[in-house]
Image 1 (cartoon, rainbow, N blue to C red):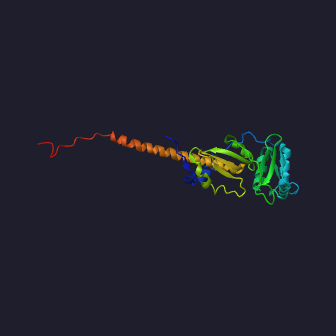
Image 2 (cartoon, rainbow, N blue to C red):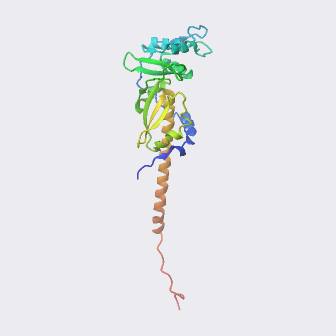
Amino acid sequence: MSTPRLGLAALLPLCLACQSAFAASGGAAPTRGAEPLFPPATRAIEVRVTASATDNLAYLVDELADATGVVFTATDQARNMLQQTATGLGADLTIAPSEAWSWIEGLLFHQGFLLSVTTSRPPHVLAVVPAMPVGGMPRTRSTLYLPASELASLEEHPALLVMTVLDLPHTDVRQLGNSLRALTNDPSGAQNVIPVGNTNSVILSGSGQNVLDLVRMLRLVDDKAREAFEQAREAAERMEQAPAQAGGSSRPGRAPPPGGGGR
């Protein structure tokens, strides 16, 4: 029996429940043991909010570059925006080397900046770009392709622009665009969900944080669709078996002759 692909629209009410279950149980979260995309930091990074020279995003980007060896580039306008954007921290902070990428990228993402891969070979070069370009700033951004098997690395890169292909064998991906429109409403145009032809795969693009969240949710929804199909199949099989069992449980008796059997 072939496996039908259930429409996502019928399963969207499960999304919030799936996300709650994921948070409670740990779900299918990628582990931090994934192969790093970029060199790790070799030292801690100090942030002093009382010193204006260190309490801004430009300082954090420069410190991350120095600690990792990765080169960051930005237009003059973007650089000015980074220098004028305070960290928003309420106290001094020391960022451990193991947390440098995820912590600083998380702050960049929260403050409306993204990272675009310029060169993925050493020496790595990443462009810092506003999520919403202003004025005459270019909208050209490079997106790093990651296979689904390597998405665990996005735990460390919430601001990185990425693209992946996700297989959803139990979901009708043709409905994804309309069904997820409310969840993927992104004025910057970075986040997209594109069904792939007559397959059950979708192309996902956006920031590492958004893509990873969407992958988690869609996998949970696809699991729910699989469970619903299996339950429906089992119920159909029971219904098919019921008449045969009922027919073999008793023999039809011979009808008595008209008017009674004895004298």
